[in-house]
Length: 75
Image (cartoon, rainbow, N blue to C red; front, side, top):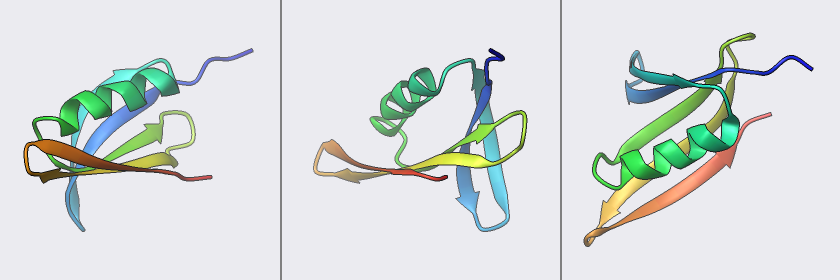
Protein backbone atom coordinates (compact mmCIF):
# COMPACT_ATOMS: atom_id res chain seq x y z
CA UNK A 1 0.00 0.00 0.00
CA UNK A 2 1.34 3.38 -1.00
CA UNK A 3 1.55 5.91 1.80
CA UNK A 4 0.16 9.40 1.43
CA UNK A 5 2.10 12.50 2.31
CA UNK A 6 0.44 15.71 3.36
CA UNK A 7 1.28 19.40 3.36
CA UNK A 8 0.19 21.66 6.19
CA UNK A 9 -0.62 25.22 5.12
CA UNK A 10 -2.03 28.27 6.87
CA UNK A 11 -4.62 30.22 4.90
CA UNK A 12 -3.79 33.92 5.04
CA UNK A 13 -6.67 35.25 2.92
CA UNK A 14 -8.72 34.16 -0.10
CA UNK A 15 -5.70 34.33 -2.41
CA UNK A 16 -2.70 33.25 -0.37
CA UNK A 17 -1.50 30.57 1.99
CA UNK A 18 1.75 29.84 3.79
CA UNK A 19 3.26 26.36 3.43
CA UNK A 20 4.45 25.20 6.84
CA UNK A 21 5.62 21.60 6.59
CA UNK A 22 5.11 18.15 5.11
CA UNK A 23 4.17 15.06 7.11
CA UNK A 24 3.67 11.40 6.23
CA UNK A 25 0.54 10.73 8.27
CA UNK A 26 -2.86 12.42 8.51
CA UNK A 27 -3.02 11.99 12.28
CA UNK A 28 0.38 13.64 12.65
CA UNK A 29 -0.84 16.55 10.51
CA UNK A 30 -3.93 17.01 12.67
CA UNK A 31 -1.88 16.86 15.88
CA UNK A 32 0.60 19.38 14.53
CA UNK A 33 -2.19 21.80 13.64
CA UNK A 34 -3.58 21.48 17.18
CA UNK A 35 -0.15 22.58 18.43
CA UNK A 36 -0.02 25.48 15.96
CA UNK A 37 -3.44 26.93 16.83
CA UNK A 38 -2.45 27.04 20.49
CA UNK A 39 -0.19 30.00 19.72
CA UNK A 40 -1.09 31.01 16.13
CA UNK A 41 -4.87 31.12 15.59
CA UNK A 42 -6.21 30.95 12.06
CA UNK A 43 -7.34 28.54 9.35
CA UNK A 44 -5.07 25.64 8.54
CA UNK A 45 -5.46 23.10 5.75
CA UNK A 46 -4.10 19.62 5.20
CA UNK A 47 -3.44 18.93 1.53
CA UNK A 48 -2.79 15.52 -0.04
CA UNK A 49 0.50 15.84 -1.95
CA UNK A 50 -0.52 13.25 -4.53
CA UNK A 51 -3.80 14.74 -5.76
CA UNK A 52 -3.48 18.28 -4.33
CA UNK A 53 -6.89 18.04 -2.67
CA UNK A 54 -7.70 19.59 0.70
CA UNK A 55 -8.50 16.67 3.00
CA UNK A 56 -9.11 18.67 6.19
CA UNK A 57 -9.56 22.24 7.38
CA UNK A 58 -8.97 23.34 10.96
CA UNK A 59 -9.96 26.75 12.26
CA UNK A 60 -8.54 27.83 15.58
CA UNK A 61 -9.74 31.03 17.17
CA UNK A 62 -8.18 32.43 20.30
CA UNK A 63 -10.84 32.80 22.97
CA UNK A 64 -9.73 33.90 26.44
CA UNK A 65 -6.42 32.06 26.70
CA UNK A 66 -7.70 28.73 25.36
CA UNK A 67 -7.91 28.09 21.61
CA UNK A 68 -11.28 27.13 20.22
CA UNK A 69 -10.68 24.56 17.52
CA UNK A 70 -13.07 23.39 14.84
CA UNK A 71 -11.96 20.57 12.57
CA UNK A 72 -13.71 19.84 9.31
CA UNK A 73 -12.92 16.77 7.21
CA UNK A 74 -13.18 17.32 3.49
CA UNK A 75 -13.93 14.35 1.26
